[in-house]
Image (cartoon, rainbow, N blue to C red; front, side, top):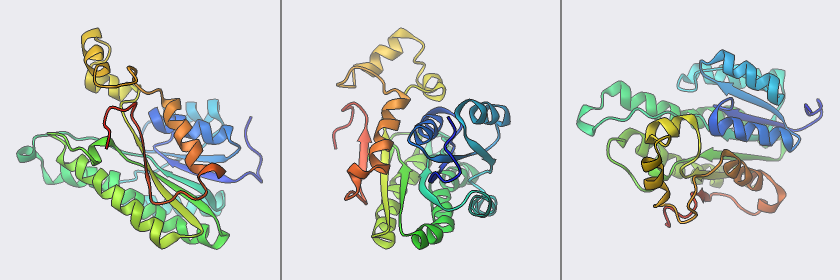
Length: 248
């Protein structure tokens, strides 16, 4: 059931596929009118909108002007968000010495600059409303870097510190936290790690104490906590949902 026009508003970037879709679905279930931003897959976006009662807006989050235009549209057509989830992200993996300037910039623009631009565009209205929650979706490689991912690891490490800076500056009205998924069952992850091959899956599972890969709903459960009343005194923190794979 689609939440009514008086329901609180949530915004999710990259919210029509993978983990982002699970987060969007959960917010709808919690009673939020939910706007999901997507980059290029219009058919998937409209399927998600129809099936899960989402409003969708096409915007390339790596383009600061396009993102601020989308923010203006959200505020004028949908209202002030109560929840903002900065989820959109990309990988362009290469050995460091082979990374081009565009490989570096595209990943930083998407994974780090986009949360900056969108939060800065929406936060004044959220502050004026007196309440709000921002959840940035991080990555374990922002804490434990990996080879061939200098751009992605650097962006996600920066996102952790951006989270803390925003938590300091936007308090007490807006809480800001970072949700960090571990290995999660998505099409992208299955392709990247060849999880459809039993040997590859077994090797991954051997590194996870819980002996399973996260479901997207596991990540949505954590989001539900971070946007709900049980976390009302939690801000500037990282919540790692990885089955114990990395214990920091």
